[in-house]
Image 1 (cartoon, rainbow, N blue to C red):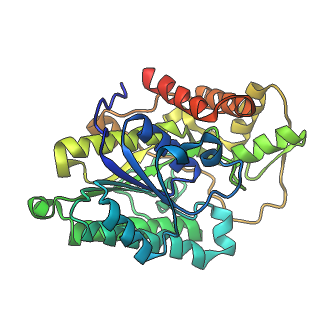
Image 2: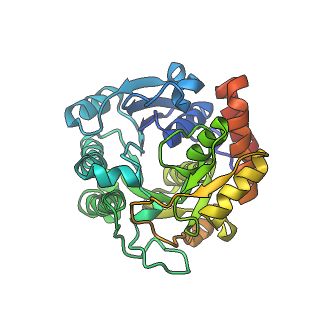
Length: 356
C-alpha cells in the first residue's frame, strides 16, 4: 500500500476537534504537511510537555480553545470557518478516569458528538464527518477472532459504553439526515472509525502503558503493569491516521460508497499481551525493568482484536509497521525529543511511513 494523497487535502478547510491531544496533534501535523487549512477546536493541552506544545503546531494552524460540550461555541466555529471536512477526535479517552467521572465521560463523548453532528447538519458547506471512536466500542465476548464492523456494539466500562453510544448516535444521524439514498439532496457523508490501542511518540497521558513506561524508565523506576496477560491490538499512531485520511480521500472521490463504520487495526502479529509489549519496549530501549501491579482495581478485558478485512479489500489499506517496528519508532521518538526539533521529528516519521 502506498500512502500518497497528492493534493487531496490541499487548500481544503478541515476542522479537527481534539487537536491538542495525542492523536489530534499527529493528525494536525500531517494535514498541515498536506496543505490543508486546519482549524483546531479543543481544550488546552494538559501540560507543557504535551506533543501539541512541543511541536509548535499551534503557530501553523487556526488554533481555537473551547469545550466540545459548548454547542453555541461549536456552531460559531462552523459558521465562521465553514469547514468542508471534520475529524472529530475530542473525547474523554481514558478507561480508568471514566470509572471515577462517568457523567463527564458521557457528557463529553456522547453529547459532544451530538453537538458536532448538529453543526454538520446545519452547515451546508460541511460535506464529510469522520468520527473517531475505539475498538472498545464492541460488545466484547472475549472471542479469539477479530471484531467486524457489523458486530454488535456494547462496552463494559463507562468509557467503552460512551463510545458505543457514539456509534449508535452517528448511525442514527446517518439514517435520519444523511441517508445514502438521498445523497443528491443533502450531499453529506459521515463515517465512524475504530482503531486499536494506539501508541507512538508524544503521548504523555496517565494510565497508558507506553507513557507510563517512559516515565518509569526516565526516573529509573520499575514499570508497573496491570493485567500482564491481556492481549490488545497495538499499532503506531500513524497507522489509523493513514486510514482516516485514505477513507476521506475516497469519500471525496467516490461519495457515499464509503459511508459507514471502519476498523483500522494492526495485523495479527500486533495482537500481543501487555507483558510482551513492555518486555519488547525495555529490550529496544536498552534499559528498564517491570513489575506486576497487584492493586489493579478496574475491569479489563483479557482479549480484544479487530478484523480489518473491510479496509483491506475496499480501501486497499493495510498496516505497514509490525510490532517491533512500531516500538522502535516509538522509542526513537522518546529518546530523541529532548535534543531536537519536535515538529521535524514528527514530520520525518510521517515521511518515513509514507515512503515505505
